Length: 453
Image (cartoon, rainbow, N blue to C red):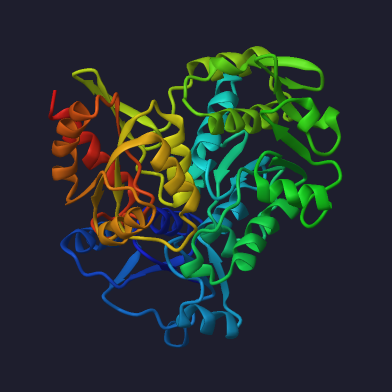
């Protein structure tokens, strides 16, 4: 029986272990943690015939597995993984393991700095409305290997891929690759913008059909220069009409006279999408393009778009209290996403921001704060840094409130003071100073808001 090591207990690692176990591998999961919850998982996995080692650093030289599968959150340059690759051990990410068992169906793979989740969710909804089994997975919905474990095999695989997942899954070759946006992010892990770019570009280069956001400045410049990784037959999108399309206009998707248009066909009214913000019109274009190029009928596209409820933690309207909308944008984990979020809501807004700070350019975000935010409430580790940056630009209506509880409580008072119609939680930060992930952070914000009612 061949042996496999899975690094990291969690949704992805657990699914990978169960898939390998089903396929006849002798599986061991390694995790540095030792919590009570992990010990319970260890007990559960042992009953399934899967070994779990807790509190240990994985050592490929002593275990010598034939296969190593890495969860997305585990750094690809971890010394033990570098050593494993030097030893010639097959070392892959959980996403690539899923690819090995899901190559029978076409993949629609979505990557980009921002916009991935909405585009992935909307694309899956359109395919499902058309009668296809098209689960969304990766950073949304299922873990990739959970899809490979489903009894009903999918007709399409709709995958959201972060740079982390692409890095450890170089063999994935989608039928359709979508690149939503590109701005600096995750540089603490990838070190340089070039490294980060090349990971995204690799996925697009592997794709049979490419769909790219032609309104994104960085991607547009690549298109104008006809440079790597863009194919000559790429589908470009633009919310600014046919005249702004790159590439061959008959291959592109654009908005004109209020309609999404492809191949001279009016596919769906742009205002059918109930999500705010011009950026969501771009997400709509890319999703519609993927569906249209896959042969989905226009009626199914229009129905899915009209019924699409939006995405949790991305400009998610939680409640209205005394005429003030409370909006959860916890997925805005960098400056660019937070800039887009604040630009999309009614102004003036009360902004709640902060968390674990990231490397990035905050200039555009700060300009939008000056224009759209009546006041800013700062939480988490980033609060002192953000306060200084606001001082630097002469913006004084901010408070350091430190905690989410205090931010939500204070936001009600400040919103009344400035006659603001919106309280927006859009952190521009990672969550890891206080929360395991952005989902739990957003859930906490939502819970606190609902307790007001």
